[in-house]
Image (cartoon, rainbow, N blue to C red):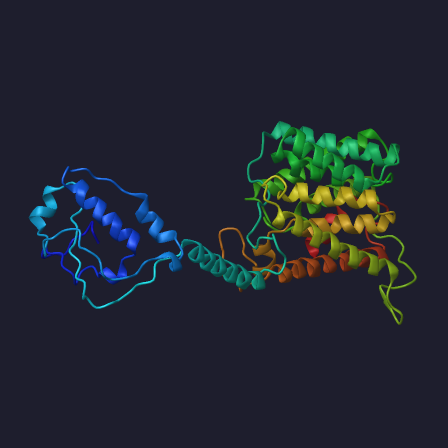
Length: 405
């Protein structure tokens, strides 16, 4: 108020009440009155101290000797001094005491409000630290064609050699090669490495020698180029890279005269006892793989860790090391491809460039949606096993089932 005097230029007792002023502030005004004569402007710590001291320490007695004897201060005299003019206080003015602001209590009130807001928000997001926004999707930038072709060829040959010659789990070989390529060479080449490694997971009847493996790498490169050239076809849907590898493997199988359908299993997918053990394993571990992958991507603060290819490779790598059942490892790896999907595409059906507003959902419902999609993928995979379709290690089949789910 001292910096903004009334419009009429007069400061009287009705403007500043003496009963509302603490004793320390009144003493401060007395000191300023003496300093104003020498045109010295000073800000005393007493004014600040008056705001942070406890209320009990204030001397609120209204009677005191006014610092300035004049009854009014005009605007012209206010402008002549560099320091603010001093008002005249009336001893018998009505008491309208305003309690001073306690800084510590004010900060505590603000903190309580923030905690109340945080508790309200935590009811909407059940899984702490997990974002509900779309994580980074597949990279739309791709290196040159020669680099992509070389990575696919290397991934196909290396994966085939590791699991058929060295006896390493095909899931471990595929996830390790994909993760190393994405982190050590170029993140944009992660998709190409994944596509080639999935094709390299084929069995010995499909890739009996290196020449057939190299030919499979060429077919996989062509299939992958078709996928990324048609405006990133099926962008945001997990399993599309595996479906490309499956297409290339099927072309190679047709070239070698290998039948797509083998012998059916005696026991069906469903019987009086319920789901078969194969179907149960596939459904459960597909759902777990999808939930773990989307949780890893959504809860990560680093864009590199939220990358779908890296997230899938990390979960597949951990599963191949921790689990002993080969079918459970394969099912977990298949679920990670479902987890590579974009939440907006999976839950709301938002195609690229055609976004629509969906219903708000919690983190728990998001994980449940991905788990359900993973369970569907596991059911499809179990159906192909019981029906005898694409048996014997068909490269890309696990990605195709995830795409179907």
